[in-house]
Length: 154
Image 1 (tube, rainbow, N blue to C red):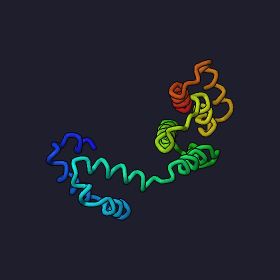
Image 2: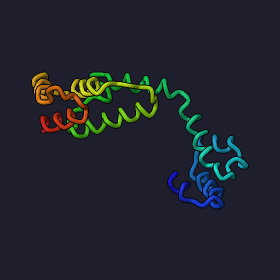
Image 3: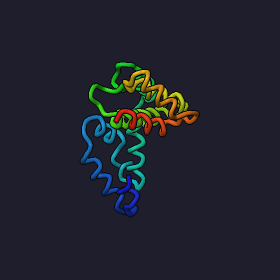
Image 4: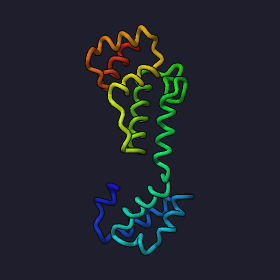
């Protein structure tokens, strides 16, 4: 979209044709259904992107629910994997949280619960988890727990 925003209004219809060239399968079908005349308009690409989002992610809330469920499984795909560094695990959990929020903006989980989930799925034993909780004291912010877990696992 940054290329689109930096483009002159008279060049925007030409940019739309370049966007079409890069589309395949379902995305191309959505663009064809959108219509050539609509795409030629100055705001055609923006409206096409909105239409694609609606068509490709129609069940965002259901997907968010499934993503949340997968993020809770003790031995699931969002738990720390064998041989995975703590830094990569924390990075993956952050991506999980961002994806969950992008799918359902109404999702709210407190920092305390996010931090507890991170610890529960980190694969640390109870002594290590207790040490991290003690070192964090009253401050249960996710960011600080991530730093504590990273240093404890090193």
